[in-house]
Image (cartoon, rainbow, N blue to C red; front, top):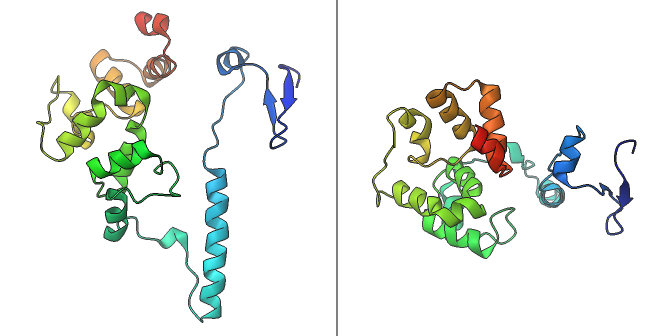
Length: 196
């Protein structure tokens, strides 16, 4: 309240700033993204209903922390694009990618969500990732030093942490310097990227 003008959102009574993200950062404020809170509430309510029924039937309660992340039937549903109501996996574009990728592990899903962004979608990175995963395209590394960093993602830069590791390995950046480069790339700051 002392640094920026605020207003109350009429929809949900939340308090928001009237300045954009970049301006807020120059004032020293930090931006946080809180994703999926409604989905978490939905899961909690569903679990409560399931466990009430299980209790009525004399069954042990279901604990989401004990659910197997490698359940083959789950990956069959995901690979078929049967993801209505699944947070971040329910759009038509994501369903299309799921059917093409055919995820087999939780790591595949992490990569898919990371790749489902305008940049990777527009540059062919997603197609390369999928084709390399399924052996339709050779996994290639522009430099031998990249193999250790990019082997888990089939030679495709998927994660911001990989950008930082590459900057450190190839250019001798400290982790702080590599983070500045990652931030400049993420925020599309051409002057800062040119300087780097």
